[in-house]
Image (cartoon, rainbow, N blue to C red; front, side, top):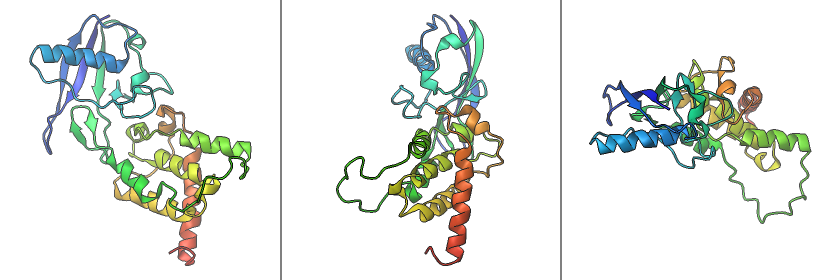
Length: 254
């Protein structure tokens, strides 16, 4: 099959203006993944002495979330519950024009071409998305019973791979689905209880510092999440944050 590509190209460096470049690619196998198609394009660009298109990828198994691209205006492209590396060319029509852009958000500055800086997510996790208390030796697995519905909810939230699709789809550039998933995961499990209140305060306030917008609950994030994270985690985050703010005002939290 043949595809026509309209790809955002942006030089490396601050304040350098990017622009769309047009490419035509033939002999594309419909069973290729989208990233393999970009590999094919880059091979041809290199043979012609042109600079290849820069894009992120790592595991190519839908786990790491690094292959975050905006394809035809949608994070990770057509389909639901998949990352870009799980998107196959058979989803597109022969000779279709495909528009490929980087995730656009003030908190995700473009580094080069399709590569954006998502270290803001790392700083949010460093603000509280962990368990630092000493738990001693690992207890026997069944010594702390967790009801099955609670374990399932925690596991669902833990599916978040931090790809940033939720931010890219949100008209406000909100990271609430990401932060809510991380807070929900640990707030439901006994290991997360000692730091539960400080965690939500620090992570939400760090997200604000990074320039992410507020949530207006349009559910655009849920619609594009490759791991089908529910907006219920945002509701839980708001409840956790409200309780924690009140406890801080009462002096129960430093």
